[in-house]
Image (tube, rainbow, N blue to C red; front, side, top):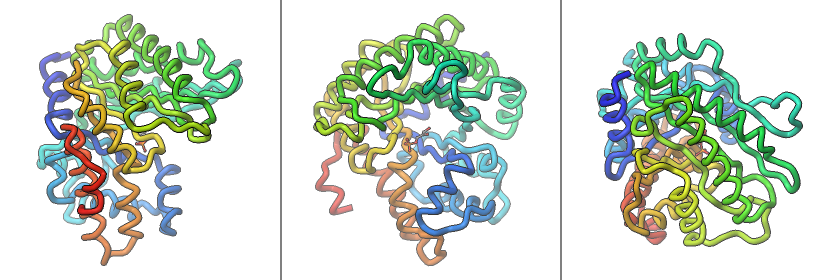
Length: 340
Ligand code: 13P
């Protein structure tokens, strides 16, 4: 393991104004996104769509890394350039989703655990050869009114995340560690904060026990936010304060960057929250984004699978990346949405 190399990749991904574009939807997930614009999910349509994203001029100012899916890492532009080569040539680190999805945790009704550790060492070696510089593994933690998540569910996911992260660092890849506390449900922001705190506490204890070097990883957490069905939705400042309070208590300062997931927030909300956090002044780590839906929803809506909409789709992506780049400095205002 070359720690200096891991550190320099992690730091480049969260350089000033920059964050991550999550474009690692599995085939079932991208099918859902394409269904929303009545587009068939063929391998060629998936390739065309990712080519639109990755060839957008100007995003390299705001995007330090792109997360790819196994199929995407192996695809090429129309001219035959492999996507990882294209991205690296633009100064954007290519990354790869390596988990194999969340499945029911045996004997723990309702809890899920993420699979994909078997054979992971060999897969990581191949991904690195194909050009990946970092990886992602997502654990899913659900909150319900009564018993979820269980303490053991949290422990099982933290353990898997740490085994994954250690294997990544051994292979020379920066692990993005993603413990996502879902925003589905009717719980209030206080419950989200309590569960997120428990999860982060366990995740960092396991990472430490597995020997993971905090300087060579990135954390991809949820924001602390009320459940979607909760009657009392917290305001922007309340979300920013609760999220930073929780992270400052549980995330070591050695971690170079926090890259939030958007998790079902609208594109505008996700940018608003990121901006409010950065407006609260410097934190021990870079406070950035690794958005999927909050960057791509406007792109899909503009594109709709039509060749004549490609320029508009790319403009939508650049605008969203630019606004999040401004939010990295606390310089975004909602009013800019209208002007953009
Ligand atoms: P969202 O921003 O759409 O939550 O996706 C980010 C991601 O990579 C989830 O694993």
